[in-house]
Length: 203
Image 1: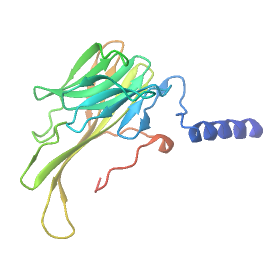
Image 2: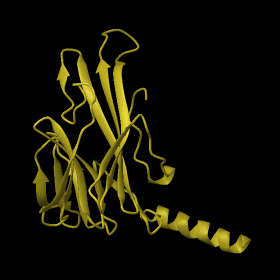
Image 3: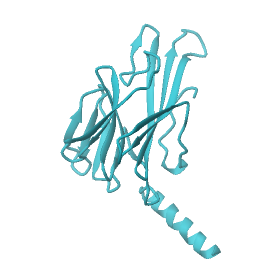
């Protein structure tokens, strides 16, 4: 048993060093690359654009395949497709796209009932601005999305920007039924080997 456990751990470590996420058959986690996420094969990636949209790229050639112009975040490129969190007309929605063609395969509206400053567009005015971070994975037939929105204020004096407001929670989409559930204040458990670099600033 001891030898088997050691072999499993060594295999997991080698796969991680090689750049591939280690996941159970029912758990799909994002495969990160700079500014975005990719599919397990590393062939298609979804990256954030300078204007806040999402662009799907052929990672072998670097060519653009399709684009979501709405304020959006790429969540996961899974077996069922590329999942995005989008904001259209001031309303949030989860969307699923065919990774290579960009054909929309499904849309699910979300009601967060959060303060008006919570937005994927990350609004800013005067000395205040907003950040909106996400982390997602697919657990069996459920897509789970954790979000953290923060409103910052520049004081003009040391120690610098201060967090004025914070809103966080988890959105769960049951892919078979289409049921969407919002759980304010919750967080997702993470595998530290698969995490992107943490954002700067207070949590």
